[in-house]
Length: 482
Ligand SMILES: [Zn+2]
Image (cartoon, rainbow, N blue to C red; front, top):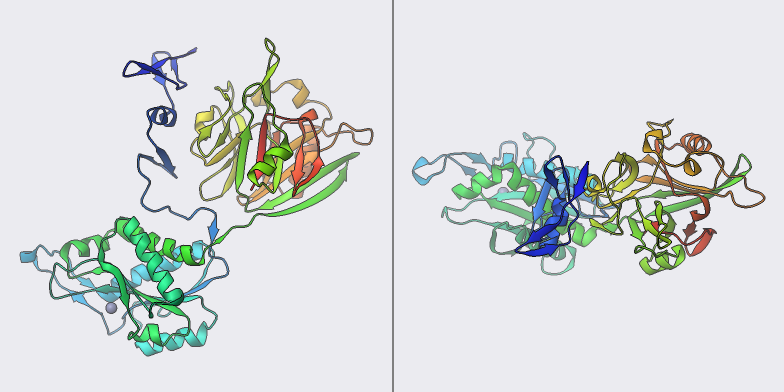
């Protein structure tokens, strides 16, 4: 049996929910750290950052490079190794580096990262052994990829003085996108703690691959292989990722576009009932919960947040003593738990969104399990798993939810970026409502791989683009698509 515990810090009570079970006290790390004034950042899959952000986000949130095309040029290659740095133990230099090889590693990594963000990519040389002159590189980009957004040449530096070090970007004159890109990348590198050579910006108008390419072009010198410490850094996987992400963030600052949610509304007549269904691609979700004892008007809240769609979220709990309704299922928005979720007694279904925007529906036993997500909304029961009807009888909902034909709301996933939100009528003379089984079967047939129930009955609300689709009573939990 778990018992709530009271927490005191330096003699003062702090407001943190925790409990003690069989002698073990459990307090959510986030709640505890935030109560002490610390900032907590979760970086999937397994990092918690206290006071201080991770240097660079793995993927810029909600942004895409879709529609952009980048030609990535790994400098040197074939018979031309570029700068070469041998081993010199007397100067603490224990590794040897051929610039061409290092350039190729970075170029391939940059290309795959840009591609993961939706950009088209091509490499000038696709093999370590291939040699192209600077003129041939520019010609290849101009001839094969005239539509390209930008040309990015990757190099590493070398200097006779071993102390020279730092990252720099060569740009074409000081106007246009070449310069904007160079400035953004250097700013991101600085923010990520990557040492710069000088101020990191160099006018490269005399460089062939910059002045002979038709598209915006930059040349990156990631660091000096002639500097023993920087040479070690450049070979380090973690450092490489930091450099690549800084470059990608800089590119996204110039060319990134917001992923726009696409909402496709459809109406069906099924088993004597109207079903209102919205297929939402690339949603940014937001959850809202009423303060205890209060209710929210779906249209008013949606307008307040500029939402494109709003639907009934989770359930409320009715406290008889003062006739108030409390949000009881976990509603978590940007890691802040609102309302009074309280531990659940059994696992219940929840809709979750990760920081990279991907969606999933899973079961969770406690609200804390959902704190790893950017946004989560608990409701239930689960209606389908792995593309098959599977009603979550273990979730222990009352018969008024589990049985009979009712107005209902539900959420399903076709894939991790495609959400289906549904409102079923059932309180009018012409609408019978649906059983959970009927609703599960309908959504599986529609293509949903996983489906969960949201609150139903008189609470069913659906509001899209400023219009009521189904208007129910005011409610305690709302799920929105921004
Ligand atoms: Zn070079």
